[in-house]
Image (tube, rainbow, N blue to C red; front, top):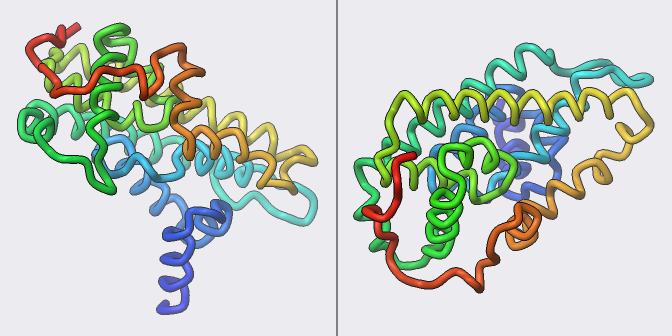
Length: 229
């Protein structure tokens, strides 16, 4: 038990071996990671997209490697974690948004991330809850901003559920398809695109067609200017 826990901690700290992390932690650890990335402001650095794709790969047998995960159970728990995480993010924004916008930059929090999410939410409205699922960092902060803007609970829940299902099913499905091909034996190649997006958020912003970090004006987030669309 101690050896398993020590190996899991090493994998979580490095975030470099997603496959090892999944094999050690299973669906339980992946569920916690998705929840933290979508619901907690300091969870943006976690390997969400790459982890989900690799997990999808491991739902398919390939050669001597059996299927290690049940795709239905995987989707169920990750979708649930994504929905609950976003609901928590909205609640935190509603209750503590004013305090958080006064925070100074630190290792786990950057004010510019909140500014980016505010601009994105102001431009896209409720649909941002769906699109942001596929954009690292943005997906962590948009629910919080929606809470600051007092987006109606029922409307938020609808788009939250839709976005969570689309995000998880599409990435698990992609991994499941790759799992039966030769690419499954080269998981490093499979995860390169999503890891690049996670490690270099500026690329994600450009891919989404929104402003880069350097073009967003500095200053506190004015929640009164955020329409609860």
